[in-house]
Image 1 (cartoon, rainbow, N blue to C red):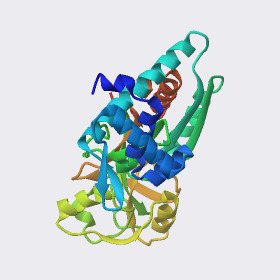
Image 2: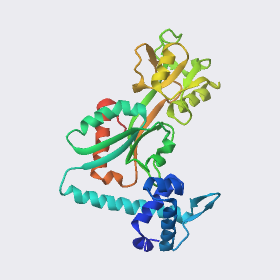
Image 3: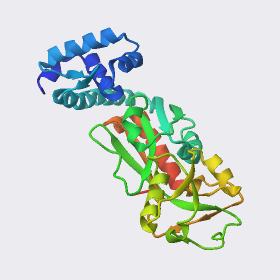
Image 4: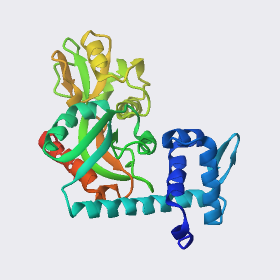
Amino acid sequence: MTLKILYMNLERLRILRELADRGTVGATAAALSLTPSAVSQQLKLLAKEAGVKLLEPDGRRLRLTDAGRALVLRADEVLAALDRAAAEMASYSASPRGRVRVALFPSGAALLLPGVFERLLGSEILLDASDEDVPASAVPVLLADYDVVLTHRDERAPATAGPRIEVTALMREPIDLVLPAGHRLAGQDSVDVRQLADERWISVRGGFPVDDVLLSVAAATGVAPRVVQRINDFRVTEELVARGHGVALLPRYAVVHPSLVRLPLSGVRAGRIYELATRPGARALPAVSAVIEAFRGEVAATATPLP
């Protein structure tokens, strides 16, 4: 395969990588502004160039064979090398420049994005930012459309890195208990999780770090939490807690409501890790590297960076 890849059409390798990212021929065609028949034809030609079967039927869809998945990894390497070569040539004539597409989860964006924009002022980098409220498991899908993804995971969960993802760890943010001012526990310095067995909880949808910590509370107390609402917007959660409709776990830097009491938990590990995810080799591109350094600089000024 190492020899054959030298003779493969680069645009066909890009199409194969898009298919691996997006899952269907139709979605791949839409992303590349091609027709599904054109995508299928190009993939057939690529299989002929490779000399092996790259796709196989899976019901009404197609899926990658083992050879197809292996070629996707090599395609990542080849395309990343071409990007690095172009960036290296550009570095001889100018400072980092160009458009960098960044996806961020909303509370992380509120904490870091304004400062990142300020750190890039005066550069020739256009930061194109979008909020994407999805779990860390969705990062591979997001990297089909973004150069950099700011994601978060429970601190006990494994890092987001994988064969097609590189990760820069940024910071740890504690997750605290948030109470209304008149709550029976509001006067304490911290709260043992065993004191929370009978509470009404306002949580987030499953797959996010806050809900992972709530599951740890359940394991420590032996009592399944009574979740009365699942809402991902922290501002809404704060208003509900402030008016006595339940208690919640919230990331420390996300709490802004003036009348809420925020207390650290004891008895469980309660925190989330911020990570920047990129495709393999993307950090070698000057513009992407500059954006990552802007995030690292903002974290150093705002919170405690991870080593």
